Image (cartoon, rainbow, N blue to C red; front, side, top):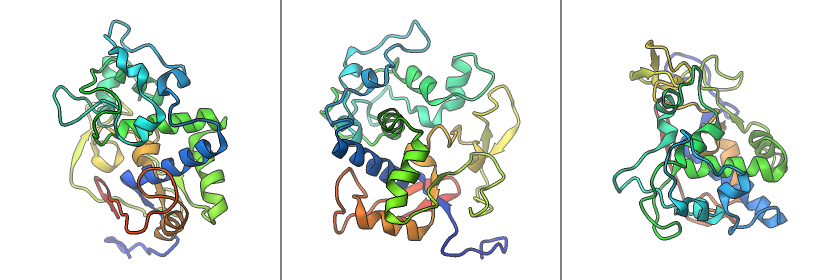
Length: 259
């Protein structure tokens, strides 16, 4: 049982936090194998997103050289170890307010805003862990597959390996029917879904300024431990390709820790 007495079993699903990226990598792996995209595909040109928001933002021209391979390898050129740095995945309320929105942002608006943020390094030159990179990869999955990201992951990655419970965890309650009923955290913050509201929200429900439906490819998926084992039997946990013996990864978010 969980801390409030709710039953937990092998079919119970939990938020994966950054282990969501392993499912995105698997989807990208299948699309590269099929020839739909390649590691050298230029990400933002492929998506057709080449203009920043706000419209007067300066764009580093090196942004347009960022490839699918750079995103996979966390070598986009945006580096959180070098100032100034901006991580849009945990600044979704800020972006909504900067764009004068009365509602939460979508993935395209997040990308358009990020295009105006300076690169710290040349794409492909340095490793810097990047949540945003995997949200962009999720958008590429959707375009290349002519499907939604969640549908492709469920039907083309999950179903063939016997997984039927890989889903996007909703930011707001209620939880899904087979999801743990609570994610515990004492922290609160302001909502990115309701950017004009000053009411405090629990961190697991958006108080960390993150909309999980927007961030699904990088950190918003949920599944069971059994399903994660099935994924590890067929795909790499880091990067793309076949399973790599001895590899491991962690995901952490407010109310969530996965290994």
